[in-house]
Amino acid sequence: MPELGLRVERLSGAAMLRVEGDIDLASASSLAGGIEDAERHEAPLLILDLAGVRFMDLEGLRVVDAARARAAAADRELVLILEKGGGPRKLLALFNLLDRYEVWDATTRRRHERRPHHPPAASGER
Image 1 (cartoon, rainbow, N blue to C red):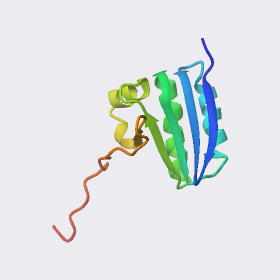
Image 2 (cartoon, rainbow, N blue to C red; image 1 turned 135 degrees about the horizontal axis):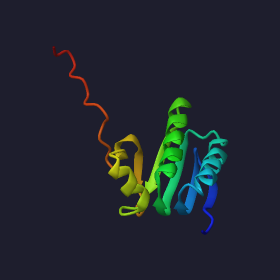
Image 3 (cartoon, helix red, strand yellow; image 1 turned 60 degrees about the horizontal axis):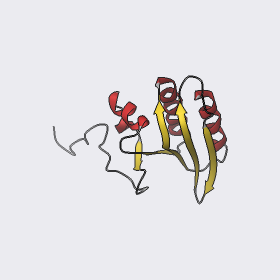
Image 4 (tube, one colour; image 1 turned 90 degrees about the vertical axis):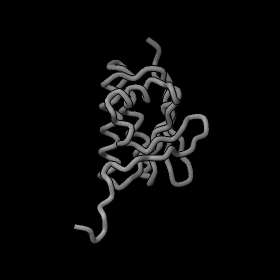
């Protein structure tokens, strides 16, 4: 099985990890190490570019979700760049988890509209 391609880039106010290949049980630890390398930059924005990922299994999802939890604890924003029909997007959609993440479109590198987790509370109404 080919190795997972990982490249950390330092951007203005952000660290980005570009990932290429398949993320499965055999490569998830490499992904975790790449994310930890990007986190060491301590940038307020961490971008995981998964546009080059063809396949991601539940172990990959576990690694990405652990990064989301660490980002929240560190008051850091985590953004996923996903292909419209790519494996990571399909897996997140299958488990109804897309709304947990800030997702940017791989083609435009722009933010998608994001639905809130909870509806906003009505002010002053009882």
